[in-house]
Image (cartoon, rainbow, N blue to C red; front, side, top):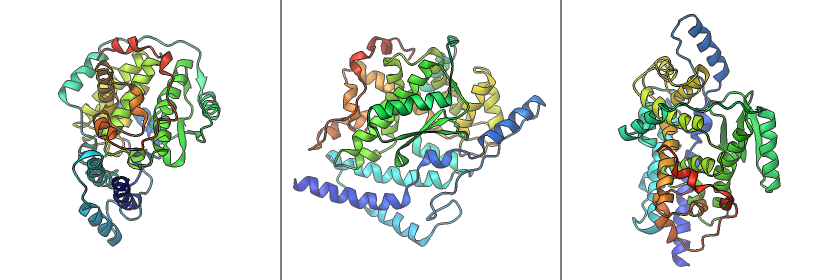
Length: 382
């Protein structure tokens, strides 16, 4: 018990600083003028004009912006850099969290500036050549057409809210127009945002359930009942790679995926790979070779969030879905149990350290893996 108390003391000290400094990347990297810029882009495209969108973003933490650092910020950053933890067992994850937090703060500070792409690579990394080749292989496959009945965003949101209510989960589903993604989970607000003015097949609606709720929301709630906040916040970006990969694999396991969706995940890798060396317009033209114009634009905007659109550079987070799916598939093939990944926001490569932790509580929420089709994962084209 003494060891646990000492760990919790150190963890508390670390997160007291992080709470003042850290900012939600997805909340602040999402353009606030998405619809206006999309309309301008396609209007210019019809005239044969290469228009580069000009995105605007929410203001960030008042302690730091790209142009200003307060004395309080400098003092807290110095404290953060000076904190040291043991490099053994579970405690070594606190060192990861400290180092990754510094990178994350720098990334959020740089949103909208020329420094953002470099900071994004420092935090998320970027797709390697082998992963890009696999993604291109998937893109060469033609997707099936989905001509099934379509449901509005309102119907999709109502369905998801009812499922949350049935599970007695006190979260809200809200509609949002200005979004690059179809859905975003904001744990601090206990909210799942769904893109307004979209239509979904029933499989598409259930995919949102599996991906957003039964993966992201479940892992967050399970982490919130643990005595360790590290499992709620994640030690490093590795947890996100595992989580997004788990979400993709869950879609497949519960038959809510499709050839088109797997192509889209591969497309995110290709969009990021291309965007790192090209402008928004050039990236769109490249993606339009593989996807219809609207989807090509969505993939391009996701890759260019936070960047100067007319210059090379990418927000590299999106390649983690495809890479993570490969890692989770390999984890299953190696005899791993997906239930092990539901203790909180942990990565596959952190499982051994997590198993050393005493007084962990069993996950409260899990997908019903008894109904899952594990053979479907074996048939994935990667």
